[in-house]
Length: 233
Ligand SMILES: O=C(O)CCC(=O)C(=O)O
Ligand SMILES: [Fe+2]
Image (cartoon, rainbow, N blue to C red; front, side, top):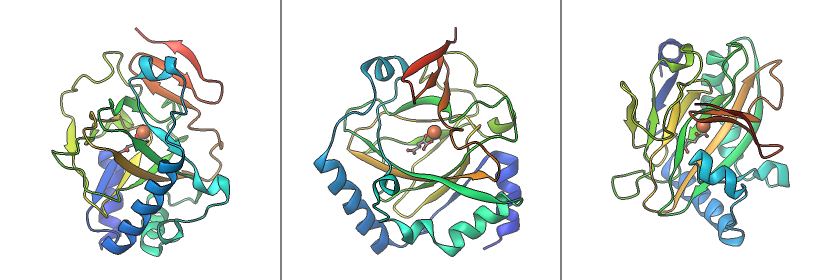
């Protein structure tokens, strides 16, 4: 693997997509573990106000916060962390591992930046891992705006409207996407139950609550207090 080339591509485009990164057996095992968890507690964790206003329908799960370190086969993978070393070359640390579940028939996720983009040095690195295929039948494609990690703040507008230049991806089982947290992205409407997983990392020195405030086209939202902190229009 040309790690240097991938790193250059990441910093140019704001993301890289790596297919067949993790093997099928591991992905099947993890997909089952995640499904098992959601089978037990399939409740929305966000407030109704957040869901209706943000057009985001996803149930997060942070297994390592519950002493369930089930996903070390990803989190401690040498190649996975080697690419992270190259992208965040001045050092990094794990932020958290977040599993995401969206029910069939739900909206997906509106355009957002995972954290405010005003300080270009403060960002999260998404390391998205897909444990099942995203297809025309499942919906839930991830849409990315190339180079938007250098574009400042996400423009005001309708939460799910297409943006000129956007790229739509259908990750397959075992695909990894490294995505800069300032890069605009969204998830299209979900037709079949959808799982994705994110092993977030941050450059050394980044505040731990960096992703507490998320930027949407119609607001900034603070998760810790379930609060709209800025209306955007
Ligand atoms: O589930 C996905 O494909 C993307 C999720 C996302 O926006 C994120 O983890 O920041
Ligand atoms: Fe995101």
